[in-house]
Image (cartoon, rainbow, N blue to C red; front, side, top):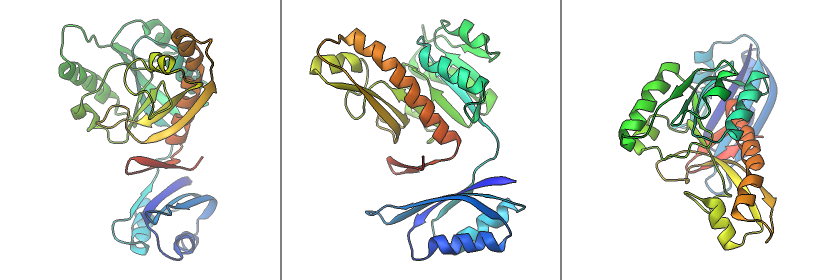
Length: 277
């Protein structure tokens, strides 16, 4: 059986050797190993793939016994991760994820799509995925978020994906899913947070535009960044042209970030990430 061991802890001499020896002594075979030590915080991160017969609980406890107090050790759950996607009206990111999951290009399944408009229902239904329209009109933000949560909880997702979901989720909602909500923001953060970033970029006369995939926290567009990319633009681009060009970047950045997350390649460390890509 294949498994992924994820460790982050205070650094100390000989950690890689100690961890590898413990796995060897348990008769498992390491097939891939990556590690990183933050030079400022002296914090150690390690992602190890191995295979063989083993007891999950025994390995986790054995590793904790080797490491400094406060070490975080976990075995990633095998199999595909369960996603619930939140959308609004724009189809490009949602459509790209639907296709990737349908053709096994992403280690995940889409359990449901939840939108505050019914625009994308016919697209989602083509893939045989449950679609839920949760109207935001005539209700306040907190009540709408609670209605979404009630739908989401039916599916027990590993992650929520905001595929151009253009509403701010209240802190009470976000706190239920720490480091489990992934958003695609249509700018190269930290520039141009919030609404209308392409309009902001146009007014500033930028020469590149980009997209940022990040985990969602209580601060708008300030969560730990998973991945980013940019493309060049020039003075001939209007704000509309920038938005059109940016859609391809958005869906590529989101897909790459999702792939890294569902393959257990991302550690969250404070408000930053360590990504073994």
